[in-house]
Image (spheres, rainbow, N blue to C red):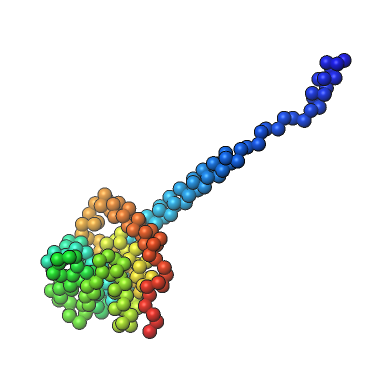
Length: 232
């Protein structure tokens, strides 16, 4: 009887509960999940931006505008580099097609240079027969952001609002974003000749570089309207 009673009593006992999880394990699990979520979110942002760089590079918008803006690139003692010449030739074709009544060249110079990128570009266009009053050289800026802001100041002074941006395909997304932040209603018509579009490897390298540059700008420089000129 005693053994039977003991067995019955054991059967009626509540089931043993698992030991509670230690707080340290819970914290580690939460941190791990947050880390995975952050990595996935970052991958989505980078991948989405790369796709936009690629997508915008394939667009070619050329509505009638106040001006065609040619982003600068290297020049050698007044002679445009192959990249800059490809941009200038494309801008010249747009000008001759009546897209805009003027071309704005842009870009400063490096230490020791006699010419600015804008000046070299302007000389090239003048030699191609563009009238002097249809070429405006804005020889300021050591990078894209400085150059775009310098052009935006000229646009404001002259009452211009719209532009077609001519640069390399992979550079268009970042340049358009900067122009919009600076108060210019801009679209892009990229140059499709020159060294930066010759091979798939070159294209991939520029897409990667521009993806990083665009995200850097949006994180550390962009603020909608921050550099836009005041209303006239």
